[in-house]
Every structure is written in structure tokens, then in C-alpha cells.
Image (cartoon, rainbow, N blue to C red; front, side, top):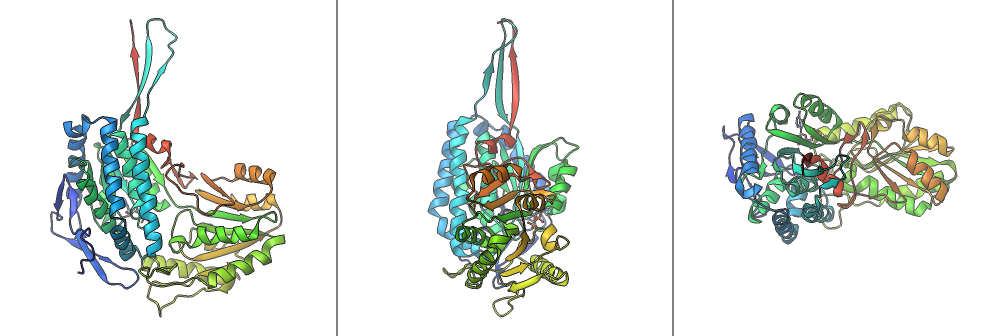
Length: 486
Ligand code: ADP
């Protein structure tokens, strides 16, 4: 194993102790660009995860955490933010090594992810209650917000840092303690930021990190344990549904950020140059592996040829390779499963008479997990590329005639996370923004995520919102106190 950063950890964090798995098992972390093993981390068991829950519960009830004021918690988050900022280069290198993400994007993610720590450091002091006028004399209605307790946070590999800080920042601001279960593909970034949380002085047991490549039984424990009061999950719709079902018995607070199937509509009224720019940003960031990536492009007749021609030129100019190089824009897919899925979707569309106008093939000369940036036109509604989230560098284009048809097709999915459209017509902008069945709309904009705005979906894309002041809601209970006989 090559130690490329002092921040790379080979142990998990439970109750302030950096520990091995109780059965000493480990699993390898590989660089998807090269296949090289870059780390080994503990393969924690269900009983280790139970220890982490116990530690989080104990920490939640401890004086060191409970007695802190909102301002104290805010200050701890600020220190954590500062340390992440100071180590942003090292964290970005770890992230690129374990996720394949181009280094420029990893640096961008550290800044984006750290913005949640800063934001929630600020929000910690603004978790206000209410005093409501009482209908009865000599009474006061007081409403306060209290932390829910222990929260389990399950995060994916596509944003190895931001998905943790977006959850943990809010949870800690509210006064909760957490058990983080990072993705098996990207545990090193998670451990690195946990190390910095420790250095920031966040008390032991407040943040615990359980690494494992056997997520299901640990997820099940989180769902069943009465000591876990909330679960926040970002990942596949399939696993999200499972967690929703399994946690129903304990009536847990649940926040689910699941897959999308984002429409990207280019109307005749669009500025095509801007639409192409937005399409590149929305589709090719992280090699198309984000849940808000545009998945289906609907382009109106009048601008169709122009949009497709310009987009093709841009796609063919993309620089593909190992994310370590500064000028690389497209890295590998994260793992073999994703690689097979992307190739399979393209073949499925080809078989259904769609037109591959560029790409459409693996790039084995660069590495086993690289897939060519691809544009496919005339994608039928029966193709997997249309009905499912591709999570890869594939643009699927569908032609349409009028606004009604575009909206009907855009909404023709059980998912509803992000949606984008380009139009310079003000009336159309309001009409379409209101009618898209999604949680987030980008109007003439392809990249919309920011700590200040509420991130989340409708339909089967999830419940709850992360970021913004709404991001605190999943981690607090509302308590009504009736003061009588005053
Ligand atoms: P992706 O397709 O993004 O890998 P997953 O839903 O498989 O989506 O993974 C997201 C996170 O959920 C990862 O941390 C993974 O380990 C975890 N996970 C996978 N299966 C389960 C499960 N049955 N219970 C709890 N967590 C799970």
C-alpha cells in the first residue's frame, strides 16, 4: 500500500478510538483509473456497528455534548470547516484516487462539501422555536426544536465528501450524534474528514465511521435499532425503498435522496450556446455519475440540428484519462457494475433503433473502466436510457414538437429529482418551471446545487431536503410545551 497522504486512515472510528474490525477483517480500496490498491480499511461487523450506535448514544447523552450551547456547536463546526479548507488539496487527492473523479472536480467537491459545514455552523445558532398566542387566558404555547438523537448516515461514492458533510453538518448543528456508513468504494475520504473532525475537537462518539463492504446487515441494524432515531440515505432508489420499508416499524425520521431521471429540455426559444454549455456541465460532471445529471435531453424541432451539432463538437473535444492530470475532464466509471450497466444501456438503445452519433464504446486502451462520452439520438421511450438513470457519460436525445409534448414526456417517469430547461421566453419559463414534477429546476442553468438551497426530490426520488435552512428539519423534533395557570 502506498501512503500518499498523512490523512489516509486504515482504521475505523468508534467512540473516539481508531479501531480494526472485531474479527480483524479488512477490504481493499482501489483506484478505478488504474485498479491499483490504495488502501485497506476495516470490514466492520454488525456488532461493531452496534458499538458505534452505543457510542453515539452515549455521546448524545453525555455532558460534553449536551451541555454545549448552539454557539459552542457552531464554533466546533467552524473549526472543522477551517481544517477541511486547510487540507483541501490532500482530501482532493484522496478523493480522486478512490473515485476516479478528475482532480479539478475533486477540489470543487471539497469546496462544495465544506460549504455545508460552514453553512450549518451558521444555521446551528438559528434553530428557533416559537411562542404562539394562546386561545386560553393564563396560558402560553411554547414550541421548541430539539435534536432527534442518534442519526445513521449512509452515503454513496459519487460525492464522497459532500454527501457526508451535507448530512453530518446538519445533524451536529441540531445537536444530534451520528454513525456514518460511507460507500465501500470511497471510505478513505470519509475517514480523512472524520480525522479532521477529531482534530477540530468534536467530542468522542459524536461522529463515528463504520467502514464495511457488507452494507445490508448494517443497514438493517440501523433500521431496527431503537437507539437510531433517524436515517439519512443517499443512493439508489432500490436501497432507499428497502430502508424506508425496514425502518417503518420503528417510525424513524427518514431522509432519502435517491436516483433521478432528469429531463433537460431545449425549447425553440432557447439560447442554444448557453444550452450546450449547461448540457456539458449537467451531463459530464463526474463522468455523468451524479443523481442530478441530465438523463434525457428533449430538443425542439427548430433548434434540434444546431444543438446536436454543437454538442457533438464539445463532446468529441473532452479530455479523457486518469483524473490525476490537471486537464482531464472525464475519468473512469466507478466500478465494473456501473461499467457494464452503461454499456448495456447503450446496446439496448442501439438494438431499439436509436442512433449512436458519437462514442458508444468502451475505451480499453485508457483503462478497463473507461467509457467513451456518447451521444445517442432518436432514443425511444422503451429504451432503458429513457426509463432509467444511466449514471454514465451518455447523452440521450429525443426530439419534440411543442411544449405540451415536452412536459408530458419530461414527467413520464416515477422519478422527480432535478429538471432543466432552456428558454428565453418569460411566460414559458414560469409555466414550465411550475409544471415539471421535480424537486429542483434549473432554468437556463445546468449546475444548481449549493449549500444555501434545498436539495431533494419528489415522487420516487426521495423525501426530505438537505442543505438550506430546511436541511435541519430532519434532525429536530418539534416539542410543544403548554404553560398553564400562569
Ligand atoms: P450506488 O448505486 O450509488 O452504489 P447504493 O444504494 O448501492 O447506490 O449505495 C449507496 C450506499 O448505500 C453505499 O454506502 C452502500 O454501501 C449502501 N448500501 C447498499 N446496500 C445497502 C443496504 N441493503 N442497506 C444499507 N445500505 C446499503
